[in-house]
Length: 402
Length: 233
Image (cartoon, rainbow over all chains, first blue to last red):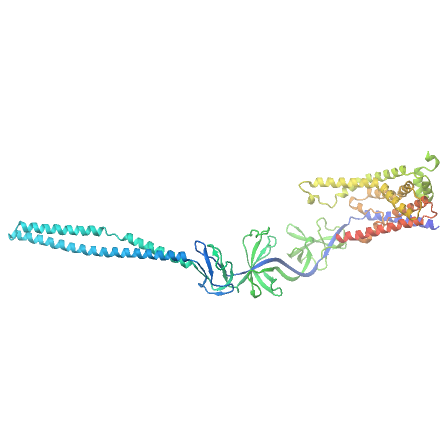
């Protein structure tokens, strides 16, 4: 009897299973979907990056001499300096020697010019005297000719007067010839050249004194005292440490949405308890090549900071740029949204049926999208609904992202 | 000549369903499994072939092959490969399952016999495995008939286990219930009766309990794996 009951129960179970399978397989096609609930949560959209603290107004000072020279530092890092103050000196003994030689050459040229000018004056005086003598001789000749007409002088006196005129003319011509040969322009040019050489040598000597171009603080000295430095090599950085900025390097995918004026938080490992607030000041107009040891290109974002007392120039800092500051928003996962021709829709689950709903979205970050209009909080939206049709029966399989 | 001495393999195959104790007694006395095994394999294969087009179509459902296409393999080639793989695996399962299952049963019953210090020849146990597999073949026949009348997108719902009553199609309960097939239990009982006949036990309870305990472990592992898989998903 027991055996028969067991067999009957077994058969009943088999029949029930077959009927269940028939009913289930002939029922309307139900698609299994993953869903997530629309929830009001704190939303923020931020970019994390690293940056470098820099002095906003700083100058790198480099020697302008045309040859390597030995360096003597006159300041130390942290020293206050004034504009024009000598902060380092270069060994310019060779240039000083050149200056002395140039000055000697100038003296010589000026002396030669002075002598030439004196001789020129003497010739001018001699010329004037010769002209006077000629005039007198000509007057004498005229007087002799008048006396001859009156019969008071003879041919002998006339000949003497004529010879006197000829001698005076000869003397005048000789002086004029001498004056013509007296040209000082070459000497004047030589003096000018000598002056230029002196100026150049003096300038070279002056370049040996490296001066601060601004009022500020010596931020960095990159060369050692007594070392030989090359022309153009930055030696000393002078700046105003109270005017700091942060330069953050953002990847090309992170730069989207970053604008001037957005709030920034800066934190330095050297003072981790201090959060420094700042603001995006500007974004570099070009993409920078990868830095040494890196492979990715980046875009520089310049950030002004409110109070840089907690930071030090050159420090590497963690930067958070808020594209959207934290706020309460209705959020759904990004994978729930379908975009068709500029219209955004989601599928919500309504009594086991997928229902297409048009939504107006706000900002999105890498996980969530803000919903401004279309659905309410706690609505279940279908994740990755690309194969779902409006009105289709759906069955939920576990939760998606929360 | 053996046929003349007793019932034919076909009669035994039918008697397994109606009077299993008698059938297995004769099978244990004169173990023969070739004809019955081939018959079960042919039935399995025939019904598998009838539903093969549907399984080929089903294997492509819900997959966008263009997403997985590479320079080396186009979307069309991937589709063809998927269909071929589905076909081959479908046929292989139909052909091999009676034999592989019988081997597993032999192995388990050999262990059971060794523990109880009973004599259980391989051939007799293998014959028990083949004949005891008949209810599973019957379930495959019913399942394939149902599939023939079912829309392709729903053929995964044709399930002759208690999972057909599960509220969801994932998780521990669903996976556990997929192992709870009345046909499997039927076969386990037949294996137990057959083992008792081979080992000359008066009652088959020991072998049946042994097989059901092993089955329960298997079902629980299946349930745990299903739970783990659904958590991953």
